Image 1: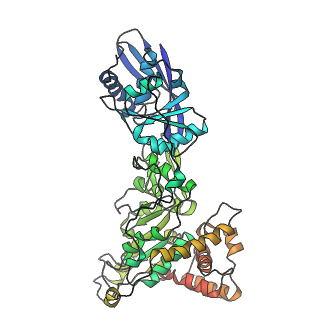
Image 2 (image 1 turned 180 degrees about the horizontal axis):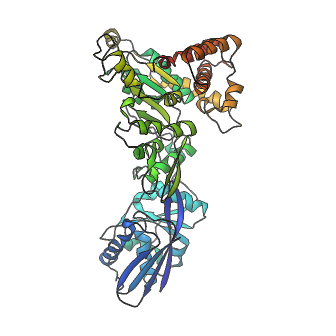
Length: 506
């Protein structure tokens, strides 16, 4: 007898329908899976056999053929365990409901018949809504995540026995409902605040500008100056995620299996800080079947690269595409995938290989210091809008009882500047100053005559590229927005040029 069950497969961060066809006929006992399955899918026959028997059902001693269509799409993962098992039970007459063919089923099976969570439930739910699927049968641990989409009945299942009873009408399982908009205001406290940072007024000003315009920033200073402390507090002054952005980010985390079971939606902008030993595949994405990397997990959030010169040259240069285009295209023999990667880069570096506190007490020669920072290529630095030195904090600043400005006060100014940008770019796809095109820079960032002369001298003296020229104007536009100025002045351009000081020595 033949049975058909609809399931879903992940292609990058998108989902596609997979039809699981199960044929049970008389003959020598065998279990064959076709349709480009990987080793994980081929091993499902042992999990399915044990799960069906331990759940109290009879496993057919016949010839079983499972076809995963379309046959030219490579299948991976354990999400096909449950649809294969239900297909076998439907082919042998145990499952008698037509609801099975009108639903999409995913789930991994344990040997005792329990249903375990799978990766990618959120993009699969989005696919079900687009395809107008009647029901989406998922593991109970994935139910809240899938219900965030809305428009599809998400049925939570805990065991294969429970799934059979539901499909046969012997058990009523109400669909899970969720209100994602209510979750967005839930900002769990993490104890980070700019009020904890002593001194570093110049660096905090630069981070405020970076947050207001979504600019990339590089901090160079000795160990203990507070570079990591500053970087981790950037997320506390960034605007909150909108519902559309939260779902967009959560899809990527769902594909990587990083969403917690009790929280099906990311409510805060992600902060990712990979170690400097990360591979190109780990940072950008890749693998035999392409998967998202750290740059995509930081989408719409912060990607913090500490000890930037210690990253391999190949890894650093691979950041050019996402920094410029906001996406990553990974091509492999098994196929290609495009991952969003519109992150805000925050990088930190020591001024020399030994990490000395100051030039006066540094044991490195000028050539060694220049060689260390010379690992950062000019094309990469051109894509970093703000480059500044972070000096060591003096004892007087550390011991000062005067309270520092809290994140809440800085965040209000950032939100006001972002509101101006939202109104300015209302009729375009751009939302922040850092993403302006060349034409938009000429339209919105045209400096007055005195500011243009100042910028011309800086370009000639520092040897700046055309890209660096445009990024100075973008930063100046953000500084003007923070000051609630409609036009850019020479003062704004002058401050923006100060944040390119490292171009003189790199």
